[in-house]
Length: 80
Image 1 (cartoon, rainbow, N blue to C red):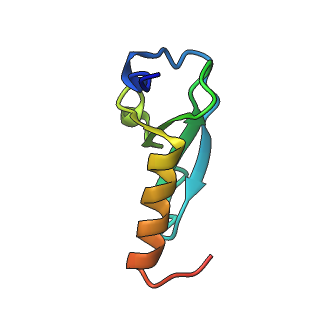
Image 2: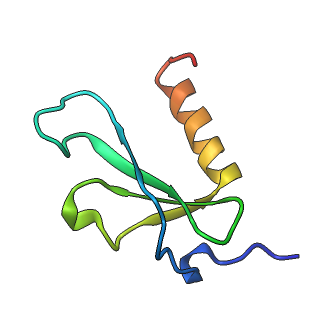
Image 3: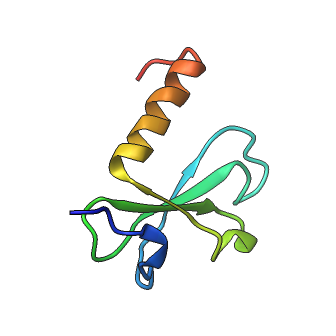
């Protein structure tokens, strides 16, 4: 079965959780919002937390998001 096109799925009702890093000079500084795409078990939407980020989400399946996180951690010399 082919993977669904995550950009064709509505995200109405998605609950975004804020993930923040350093340089917290305001409520939205250095943050992203991440949500599970409703109606699909393994789809995620990621956006800038600033108001202008709404409607400009990047979408990933779980394996894509996991691969990004693993590569990011490794490239930065971090451990989890």
